[in-house]
Amino acid sequence: MRGLRPVGGARPPRPRLVSVPTGEAVTAPVPGRLRVTRAGRLAVTLVVATAAVALLAVVLVGGGGSGGPAIDHSTTVRSGQTLSEVAVQQLPQLPVAEAVAQIQLANGLSSSAVHAGQSLLIPAVG
Image 1 (cartoon, rainbow, N blue to C red):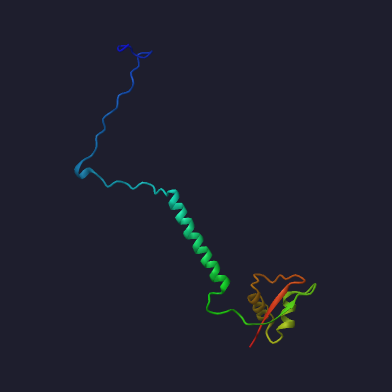
Image 2: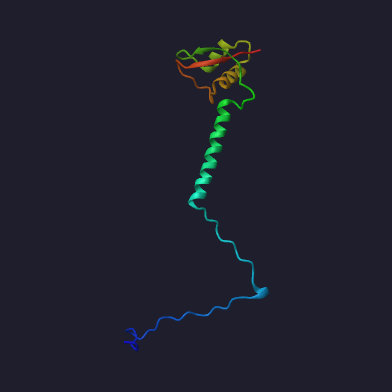
């Protein structure tokens, strides 16, 4: 059995010798791609989540410095009433655009859309 060759007479390939540079011909190794382990991914996720929660807390609390506009009273939006109409009625001493902006700031509104029954905080002016 020792002298038998595989069918077809083919021999398995022999390993080839490779010339390796030495001395000054050697260059610095190229760093491989960074691989992040499961523990590394967990650490990054926890850091990002902690930062997001901290940012959210600062936004909700108002930064701790200024408490935001002082609130004078609240009002309820009637059917068909717009934010501009509420501003004119509740803050007549201010220009309409400024009154709308003050009410939006006091209530955390990103647009001028309001709906009937919505309660709005009216800031103190002056």
